Length: 115
Image (cartoon, rainbow, N blue to C red; front, side, top):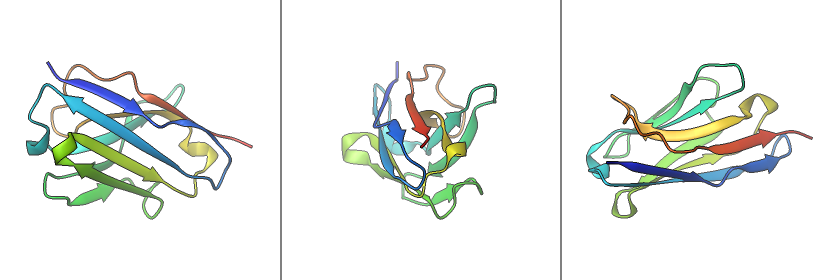
């Protein structure tokens, strides 16, 4: 049974930055392509960024150049560094594996970008 615990969200002004963390337990973290997703009010969950076990990354067009995904396989943790935040980045952010996400999503971490 995998457990995912996201943290690091908060309220930030436009142009600000945050670093999100996601700790995973109970599964073979290092073998999975991990991803960050987000869900804004009234919208479907969308894929934001992904990273392979070897560190190859890809990003949604809306966050390219502003977000950086990374991982520490020894700590079973994936990170999302976000800079130049915009109001449209406001959402609950979740981590999970990219391919066939685990059924047990974490509680997510709220990111609110507002002046």
